[in-house]
Length: 266
Image (tube, rainbow, N blue to C red; front, side, top):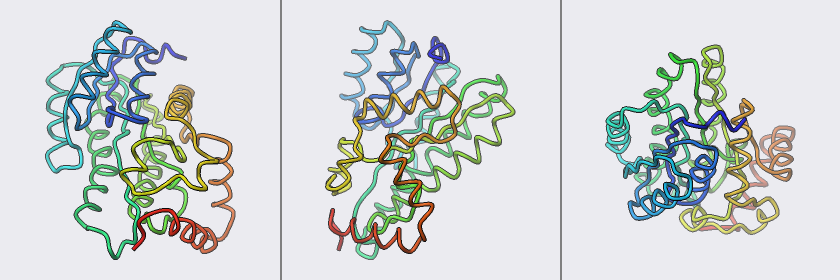
């Protein structure tokens, strides 16, 4: 299955750290040339130099902030200028923020929607037609187990990931007959900078935590196998199944109680 990536080009957003960095590393080990993007030039250049030296492949760096109104357009323009066929689009960039919605900064929430929802959608719309025309390639969208139920005290984040999951499955059905795969990766807690930015602690979720390396590996394996949705880890799988079986009110109130104890919840 690793021949799926060998000699192809993959675009990875949010590649400077965490799951995105690990996805880039593992794609390189599978033989894919890379376009890596994030806001941090230093981190991207260091990763690119390492992968070029170790894997002997091409790695292009594009610095872009996809949470800004012009970030996606800049990325599209610079990738197009490379004149390569992006066969695998890895929409990983995203962030969350804990806290009660009534006390949130709406500008930050809008940036979250732009990065978590709008950027993947616009990039997919840009690259999917070429994939369909050549009847190969695909899109891996990094969603979350938060997509499977409402998330009090991370309400906007959970909703953005629910959008990403629903859209991924629907898009995959549309593109299946045209030879293009679409997979939604739904990790549970992964110890990265995400918790620092979000203002949360792993707390009780530590039992379900997987490393970024393991999360990326399972995501890429599921993508290779043509799976629509990949939930990583047995605990996370049970949790998502349980959330579908129990009444929504029970799930939401239980999560609300747990989340209120975890972070900045004014």
